[in-house]
Image (cartoon, one colour):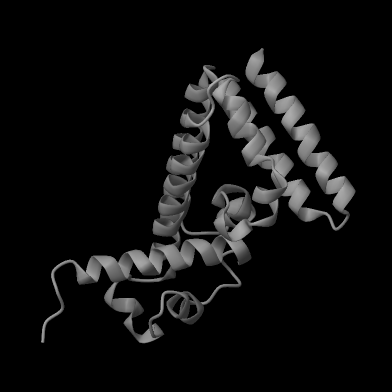
Amino acid sequence: MPYPKGHKIKVRNKIVESAAQAFRASGIQDVSVPFIMKGAGLTHGGFYAHFDNKEQLVAEACRYAISDTIALLRKVADQEKQNPKINTVIDYYLSPYHRDNTEMGCIIPALSGEISRCSEEVRQVFTSELERMVSFISTLAEVDTSKGSALFSTMVGSLVLARSVNHSELSDNLLSAGKKYAKELAMT
């Protein structure tokens, strides 16, 4: 009996969502195809019916995860009525919640260190999606792309460092300092 119309697309989307969550939490290198497929509720034998290789999945997971993050940040910004919307986004991005929930967070700080060792296809998708994120931040902050790049770089760097240390007070201080300087940069 044939699958219903749209079944293959739904399965593919489940795989991409599972991969995005796994890559956010554990990086690319340490996540296997069987692990991703298990996370999607599937056996690893069906992977190649949807993707040519893991690199193709990494590219699609990056595209999906960055779109997901932009949608979330847009929702966070839209809830703000009084303060500049960019400040609300900075507060969320550099929050203990975002720091501590990597599997649901922005994939850019999670994968930036590994992307340089990926295929040109993955790097091209990551580059394009990073440009889209910088454009979103720049528009929200009402700044040019150069300042938006510096602003987002401050946010990402602060988050990466806050996640990297094993000292909770230092981690919190890194988030606080990142918020302060990101907001100052957005307002200049």
